Image 1 (cartoon, rainbow, N blue to C red):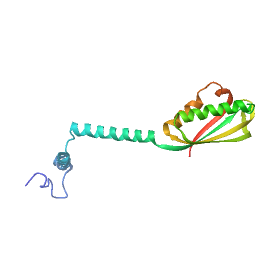
Image 2 (cartoon, helix red, strand yellow):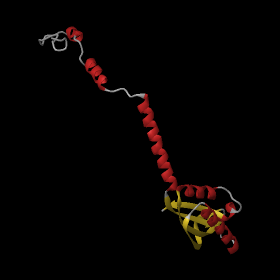
Image 3 (cartoon, rainbow, N blue to C red):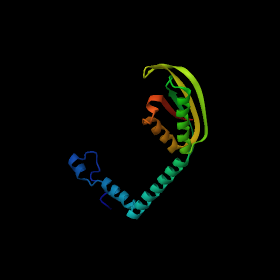
Image 4 (cartoon, one colour):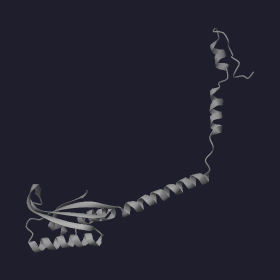
Amino acid sequence: MSAIATPVCSSRTCSAAAARQAPLAAPRLAAGRRAFAAPASSSSKAAARSSSLVVKAAAAAEAATEQRTYETMLVLRPTMKDEERDQELARFQAFLQKQGATGLSDLVRGRQRLAYPIKRFTEGIYVLYTYTASTSTGQAVQKYLSTPQAGNELNILRHMTFVV
């Protein structure tokens, strides 16, 4: 019989020293389990990496061409003349068209009271734009409105873009 099958002490009066000398079966079982696992080759790891890169690139390309509906709310300075307001809105519409936005509609909601003073103004002219564009266009709109363009930092008090 093998050493694992034969008990070291068969009676209940077994000493602790005899129990410690008994061979342990757990390391052999663990070693046996490791033998069943096939080692991963470097070529399979490289194939898995390259397939994950292809999947990520395809997802990025799909996300870039994905069309979404956006709403951009602008709060303009209330002391603007109508010509200035129209020029500012035409400039923003031209930017959206240049970025490839479709279904562009604008709604001038008029002068409304602000919840809190912004640059010492208590009122603002609200303009809502609705358009369909790619996700890169949505990011470009935020960047365009966040950077101080000629006249933008004085005329646009606040802006917010939402994905509908």
